[in-house]
Amino acid sequence: MRRSASLRSRRMKLPPYPMIELDPAAPLDLHRATVLPEWIDWNGHMNVGYYVVAFDKATDTLCQQFGCGWEYTRDKIGMTFVLEAHVTYDREVKEGDPLRITTQILDHDAKRLHYIHCMYHATEGYLAATNELMLMNIDYETRRAAPWPDWAMARIEQMAAAHKALPVPPQAGRLIGIKRKK
Amino acid sequence: MLASLPYELPELVTTAPLDTHRSTVLKEWVDWNGHMNVAFYVTAFDQASGAFMRNIGLGRRYVDGKLGMTFVLETHVTYDRELREGAPLRFTTQLVARDAKRVHLYHEMFHADQGYLAATNEVIVMNIDYATRRSAPYPKPVQERLDILWPLHAALPKPAKVGRVMGLGKK
Image 1 (tube, rainbow over the protein chains, first blue to last red):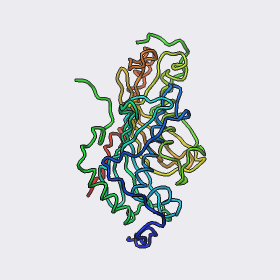
Image 2 (tube, helix red, strand yellow; image 1 turned 90 degrees about the vertical axis):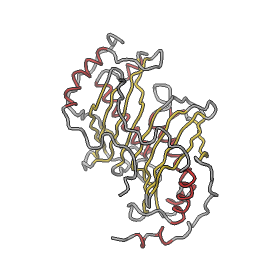
Image 3 (cartoon, each protein chain N blue to C red; image 1 turned 180 degrees about the horizontal axis):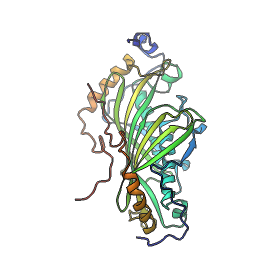
């Protein structure tokens, strides 16, 4: 059944709020954060769940690039839901550590976006973690999967084209398991 | 390898999969979409990993006694259905693989009343020596418990969601 024509987002050529200027950098290298005291667990380092909190905020930064950030939900147009996530925890980070998160688009279709974030210690430079994600566009009213709005699709295509030339990080497409040494 | 642990281990639960962990979606786990945020699924699953670890003798006393810690190396989550604030959660945990230092666990999260599958999580957890903060073989009593559990979990069917690789799977 074709119902997309009735969706509010499909009737809009542009969002009812200003879009930020598209950042042409590949990968996207905008998101910065600091490890908060409440992100620390009894092992004295950032807890596994809060790596994902930090990564999810980097997803907000990504979605703002194509006009599907906070305003998209505030104005009851749509939402973005994560379908699947894979995290590699590569090195510990401690309270107060500055973080830099880069984002690379790997693939996309009419409703979904597949991408990977890399989290670095911002001053020491080491890779702390990666997060591969599958994101789905959701219509606000039906709360079901829906095609990206035109304005978002145009920008996703622009970003995907720029990111296509990048090497795919080795952490993308990983199969989880205990690798036995031969 | 530690030959013993200086505390009494809890009675071993041998049910496979382990089906003891329960939880509730907290208010602070809910995001602007009005459902449990992706990150807090990982937090909730981490607590289910904690229940598995306690069962093999690696609870809070293992860390407080400065003996060792358990670090997650990698995690894979499928988000199958939304959960709202206050939803009661039930977790099952299957031991998928293990070696001298690591376990590969597979959790399923269900809405405890409505019964639907809300999410799955595969996780690799490494044993860490407290002093060196590096990987180390499990203490002997823990290995013994894993030896008891392993055949019981290995006899379970392999869950369909184990070993997923992410992709758009274009037709």
